[in-house]
Image (cartoon, rainbow, N blue to C red):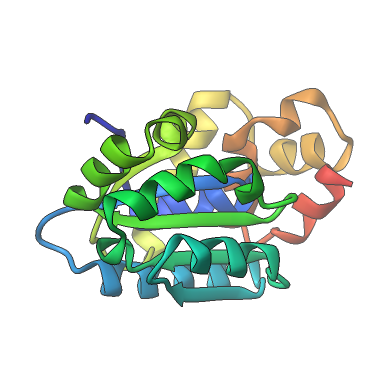
Length: 197
């Protein structure tokens, strides 16, 4: 099961820009609990949003917390407790898992990803394009932030001010996920609400 490998911070930045139902696959050398906690902290820091981290133990738990979701983000872990039948229940209720514009993240170990594919193939297929393996790097420091900004400037051939203007003016190019990440890197997450509104 090959998935793009991204830094935890980069994944959180892209997720903060476009809330959706997503999956994070944690590498063997990193604990799911730690990954879940750090991802939730990174999301809070990036988008100053309400992030709820929940340890689940059944398909019913997953449905309940999603239906009751009052926060902007929900980070779920604990999928090792799900039996094959529980995964099948989750598969049948997949349409109820849509976050109504909020972000929902399943944090899975590699073994749990295989259980998802075997027990909930329709849900796994649905999540396939939104699945990423994350690395356990430290939170973004100034050096890494500036390197990413330089890469974005070069890739798009525009300045920071130009990027901000595209988002503020509602230019179609401002919908590019790179531009959303750019705003987060610049500390201008407030502009993303304008873009979506």
